[in-house]
Image (tube, rainbow, N blue to C red; front, side, top):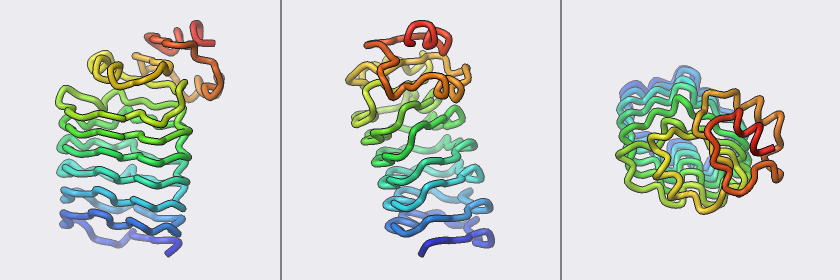
Length: 219
């Protein structure tokens, strides 16, 4: 299977979508514009191993009942763009290894990624070796039990935006010294264009407070 159009696919009462497209290694295009997951509880491993997908638009995904989404994009090695603009999953408990092996991702902007009850986030960005920027301002929360190896295998000088409310947990997990931005209100896309964060633009242990300081202290 190379292409799938699910525009008229009624999934409004489906509760378990585990591994729905898992192993579709030749899948290049999938239209999910009208795909409903409103009743889904488990969407784990949904796209696992879809190693030919380059883009996913999940802006229509709204799963207030979803509890399990671990390994959802694991092994999507060619995935360059993913739209998660309306990802508001207040019931999610497990989301470990969500982007494991997404080696083509360069940036992930997740300001609307509300997962305030998620407990297990281990290996979330595991081996995303080209991921230069992540905004996880609303991802980590006080309920997070396991965020072990969350950033393992990422570039040592990646830029990370996160809030002060979860700073201690993240600081304890990061094993090296990326550029840490604790105010994500700046225009991060313009910042990425202006600064090649894949080179040595960030000095060691650059714990800065906003993108202005990133500009003045790290370049």
